[in-house]
Length: 310
Image (cartoon, rainbow, N blue to C red; front, side):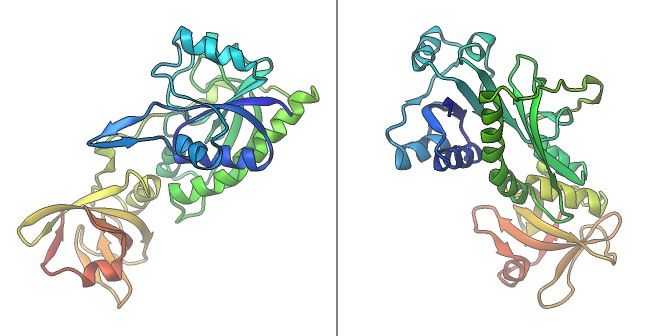
């Protein structure tokens, strides 16, 4: 099997890396984002934490900029066959992409050419798409525009959150990568150019998009909640007595009756709902700022003051 340098930073990338290592892929180095200082704490990427805890023999590289000439020389010394890039977090230049002997591969969480960009899975859920997928592609300088080597379609269930779909994709990313590497090794890999006319862009989620507008339709709000759960989380401002607070809504369900907009009601012992422009939404999981995630029953039972959604 080829020798691999793995580029990645967040938890999803760490899951993919761990799966590759469990499947005996020869990872000879890992490249991840530099440590960050948060208050008095050092924040390490999920990929670095995984390697330090379970695979300390693998070298970890953390360039401030992946385009630095010193870092490129370092990479060349590994003489890797394949670079695998999974949500690394930096733009990679051609001088770096040309280093591996065989190919630079990227795992993208959409069915390209739809949803190129930073938040493909979240945008697909927000748009109410019925399916999403994983694409293994050749990395080129243009954003997510490289030739496609392999795809896997995944159905989006009506109440599935982005977190649910990330977990599903974690199961498939490493097997697809291994399949592609075997085809490259056997000279049977097929490179399929993307249809540029079908390309769409999935921009990064903004802070403004996380706030719920209860005047929107139940379907629109439900999709917003699903797309942003568990992180960063769709939120609503509330008045708790005289105090203004934020509460994240992490899971909802569309109901078949109506309530006045922003008005919440206890429908039964275990069902709490709020009104939207069209019909009512069941509030399934909530999280008051600074508190733990609660079921709606736990959340509303714990309130000591009247609550109003804004």
